[in-house]
Length: 449
Ligand code: GLU
Image (cartoon, rainbow, N blue to C red; front, top):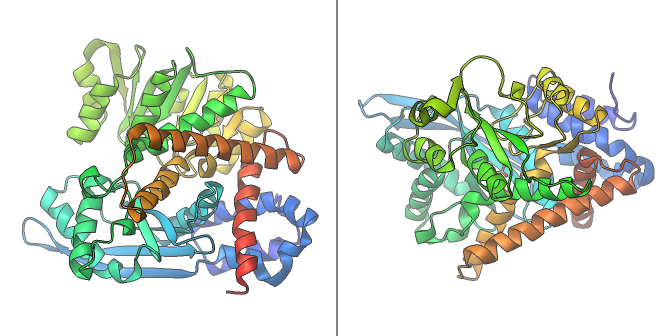
C-alpha cells in the first residue's frame, strides 16, 4: 500500500521505470516522496516546473573503467562511478565508497540522500557521491595506491573546488584520500586543497573531521533525548559497525556517560559487558585493520564474539546503526522494541529498512534518520573547505564547537519542521521536508536548469 500523495505518484512511477532494478535508489526516493505529500498540499507551487522530477534525476552520472596492476603483475578492471546529483546549493559534495557491492543504484541512492543531508547542514554544498566496486580487503598499500591513482586519472577532469569535492565513505579513509589528492595534484599541477576533504592534517585537513560523523550523531541524539528529559548517562548502547563512524560514536557516548556494550563488522559482532575498550578497538580496526573477532581474542574473558544471529538482539536502550544500508530489518526493530529501546540514531546512510522505520515510529521510539543524524561528517568537510579557502587551520575545540552547534541546529530544524507540518516528533518527515525546501528554493531561484 503506497502512502504517496496521488499528485506525486507519476513522479515515483517515472523514477521506478527509468531506474529499473536500482532498489536502494527506489527506497530512498520513495521515503522522501512519502514525506512531500504534506508539503505539496500546503504549497502546491512546488509541483510547478517539474521541480520534484528534476530533484529526482541526477544532473550528471559518470561511469568509467579503472584498470590497475596487482602485486603479482596481474591486471584488474574495476568500475568507477561519480553521480553529480544536485548543485543548486554549492559544488557537488559527498564521499567515495570502495566496496564490492557498489553499483550505480547504490551510488545514486547515496547521492540523493546526500543532497538533502547537505542542505540540512545549512552550508553551501550540493550533493554527489562516487566510488567503485573495488574490494580493498586484503590489498597491499601499493595496490591501494595504484588503484587510487588509476581511479583519479579519470575522475580528476570532473572535479574542482568549485565543481565537485569528494571525501571518504566505506573503504575510503585518510590513506586513500592522500593517494587520491597526490594524483590530482600531479595531474593538474595545482595545489587545490579544497578539491577533496578528509585530508591529513599535514596537507590541509581539518581537525575533528575524522571524529565528526560519530561525534555529530551523538550530539544529535543527545538533543533528541533531551526533548524527553533523557540523557546518555548510564544507558546501555549498541553501535553496529566498527569503522570510522562507529568508533567515534562509541567514543562520544562513553564521554557522555553511556556504556557501549556491542559493536560489529561484516564477519560478526562482539559483546563486552564492561563497555567497549576504545583503545583496543582502535588498535584492532584502525592500526591493524583486522576482523572484529580479534577484539574478543585480545580482550580475553570479558568479551564474546558471535558470527551468528543479529547484533540487534543484544538488549540496549539506545541503538546507533553505523555500518551500512538496510542492516537493521523489521525483525531487528521488533527485537529492539521488545527489549525496551528508547532511541535510535542512524550513523550510517539508510541503515534501517522501511519496515524497521515504520515499527520504530509506530512504537513511539525516538528515531533520528541518517540524513540528519550523520550530517556532522559532511558539515565538517564544509568547514575543511572553509579553512582551505582562507588558508587557515582551526583548533580541535573550535572545530568541534562548530560541529556541535550545527548538529543542534539540524535537530531543531527537523523538530520544528515536523511540528509545522502537524507530526511532532517525526524526525523523518522533518528532515525530508526541511532538506527538500532548501534545495527546492535554490532551484526555483536558478530557473529551469
Ligand atoms: N560519506 C560521508 C557522508 O555520507 C561524508 C561525505 C563528505 O564529507 O563529503 O556524509
